[in-house]
Image (tube, rainbow, N blue to C red; front, side, top):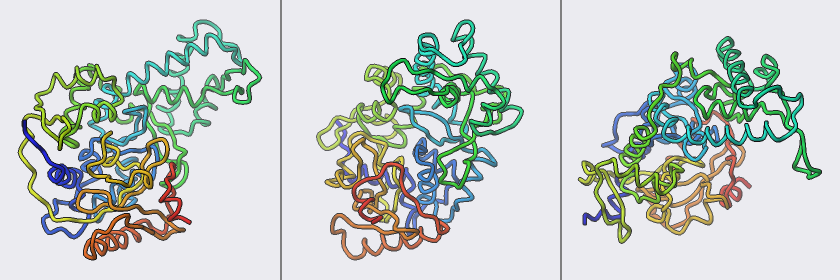
Length: 400
């Protein structure tokens, strides 16, 4: 069995995730566009809006905040949508149908079944006339018409034009959590999972967590191109293996959110070979077994929920003993400092100033490279202060 050791895995990580270009590396590849960056890691995590921007800046030394906004909202070369594990991602627009059919469509089916069940069994205000499923479909059609006319709108603006979105589920118990709730957000989220809507411009700055909604037909005039689930899952697995391989079956299952059976069934449709990952069974595409050429060590500051550290379930080979300091209790990683393809520390912001801490001795030259990476990133934030949505022990400590 072919062995791919930890050093080769880190080399692949740096090259393929475009981290070799994060520092002054003579052999660095050409500066990638925003879609290039997203494609390199399949998808950029977008649960925390700032992560998308910082993930791009970490991989393109000349990209600006405006460049990322333009890609998202002007030329639409990337799109923000619901994807794997019911999580928000930013993907190249051409990859949108694959992510939808391969991951989000199944999520949408679950969301719809749950909402229809509640609309049928829980009292509503006003009372729903007729079949709940048909009513929901009609409301979705009305919301889509509003957005096709307006282009983009906040949820409350859509609900003002389509009042049925303000229908409320009424409490059935005296529990504090059981309160009257409008279905606005749930219906629009469902439409996003179904591929009818995508996230639009933020309501405030580039870090705002409140967003507008836009019709998917603004990107795909005939609607999101339908793909067979098996075909989409096979392509999604192939892209993950190309970017993150070698990995384990458990890694792919965790990243996609599929069941173990679905993961194995999908992998069976691909030409893969088994490899030994320092004693752990792994897989890699059959045409991707040759080693990547070594790159010069470089430093990078990656944001919370960056797609690189969130790409595998098993992270010891690049994370080492730093999990407790850099993850929250729910498995969300905070801002990390990287050197030569592995995590060596963390960073945060005190006011609008970047502060960092190394969690191990990496030598004077490497420490200076980290300081240089932070100094280059600082002015590119344009005096903004970034606080992750999910805060980790070291990030909280650094922020003071």
